[in-house]
Image (cartoon, rainbow, N blue to C red; front, side, top):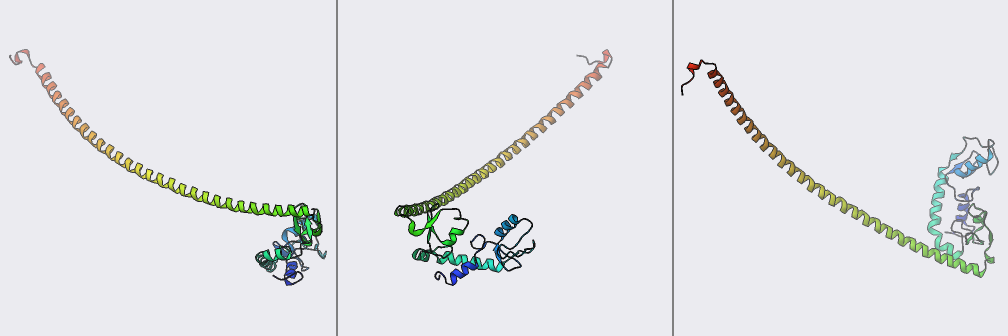
Length: 247
């Protein structure tokens, strides 16, 4: 990926915001031609109040001036990916900062990691205690190795935990499908039972209606017969006594 002072470093500098000293994030370009992260420029505008000027050349900046620099954003993203792909092993072998491609000449005592001069000026380490890398004591070096080893162990545990979590989620999804399938079979069974019971009740209803109709017909006939008898008796009672049938 090149070497310190070469084309890669030059590209890195072109893709670095002069305010945060990091790769551009959502870069915007001013009328004066300078580029900044959208968030960094907005913060400077808030601190500057009504009078807003370019943080680099101090030229007045109209409120509507900042425009998205899509070309620079694309170049920065490509460079970021190239850095991520190619800087790992080379940075370890050459003692270079993976982010800025600068030699790791400093040591951050707060974060216990080697950093470059650009990292030292960044927001991440700006307020930290930093010493030259050669002043790191043997105890600190041993501690640093222990921390790196612990980080590797934690990374392995994290990976194992992610795998266990994935397996657990898969098992839960399978159990969910089993529950859904079981209840679906139960619903189908209950639906069939419901249809059978309703059909049986409908048959009983028809039988009851037939019996009820027969009983009503029989009772109607009996009432009619009794009414005829009553009429006959009443007619006999109205006849003179000598006209009653002789027994």
